[in-house]
Image (cartoon, rainbow, N blue to C red):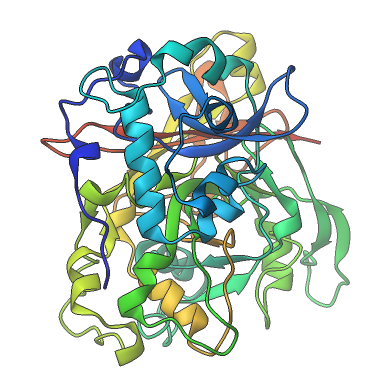
Amino acid sequence: MKTTPIDETHGAALRSWVESAHAPGTDFPIQNLPFGVFRTSGTESNRIGVAIGEFVLDLRACLERSLLTGMPTRILAACGESTLNALMACPDIERRALRHRLSHLLRAEGAQVTAKPHAAEVLVPQREARMALPARISDYTDFYASIDHATNVGSMMRPDNPLLPNYKWVPIGYHGRSSSIVVSGTPVRRPSGQIDPSAAGQPPHFEPSKLLDYELEMGIFIAEGNELGTPVPVTEAGAKIFGLCLLNDWSARDIQKWEYQPLGPFLSKNFATSISPWVVTAEALAPFRVAAFHRPEGDPAPLPHLKSAQDQALGGFDLNLEVSLSTRAMRSHGHAPVRLSRSNVASLYWTPAQMIAHHTSGGCNLNPGDLLGTGTVSGKTKESRGCLLELTMRGKDRLALPGGETRAFLEDGDEITFTASCEREGFARIGFGECRGVVIG
């Protein structure tokens, strides 16, 4: 499997002339350089930007000031676009070249070319930037890659046999709805649907969901695609990852319970999926690659189309996730959001490369900008469960909140916020920003 190298752009000692890029706790030091799409009140269309500290580096403005001269032709054209799709389609060697140029533009010392003299023209305060979806997402697939999540949910339905027989053999997934993917900060309207009848023999009823939930996930953006009918070998699948973002797969559990058999989720999940605006690239994540989940003795080995020694050695991501809740009453009384759980992407049973290899194994073609969800990322402890369905055991164990409130599922006015970060000794901490959404009736 082709892996992204660790190089000078990851150096912990690198400093930027953008002072906020090395503020304690920043998500966006010079070692990160995530991509997003934004506009301001003074621009006519969306632009590609790179987060650096509290600012956005405007790539179209960099083009106009010849700061990207010498970059490959495809990269130059892509940096002037209004979405990341063209950049995602560029070969990884060209994307790495752009990362090196951006790193030099923002370095405090030793840069071959710097953007500092043009700071007023190329930097936009993040507070003035209105973020948009980073790509045209033509297709969205959501997986079910956390064995702890699958076991927790399965134990509520099938206490004696939580995991179905196929789980340890095949990355389970379903095709989601790309048209309802929204950027962080977009309000999420409570969906209506058919609800399981309360008594046997009675017809279902149609009403707003009472069991609205979040699902703490990561999104995987596809880089170069594959031709229809041409599977991607697992040894090459890692190179198809452009980058990762936060993803909230909002779920209406009561609608889901009634509709999910025999073909899986439908209206219970197609009403909204929120993603964070910044895409942290595979290049930035290189220092935080770890071994794939260690399968316990007795678990089957992956089938050949899902097995690669290098993917087993470096196919995972050591990536910490957190979810917090703020209710309308908490905000009115000045209470800080409450952290509900923490988990880590390294606990996923299936790696992103395995998801991509299996997705394409029958000949399905993926395109630049397609989005894959990992599925809810949960761990073995209660504090690491990635949704309310698990945290409250289907509503039986209500959560206590400040001011005397409790929650089993989400109520109108509740705001859910996801954050994520990577930390490793010898490297700078990097983060993903936020993925936020407030529920409205």
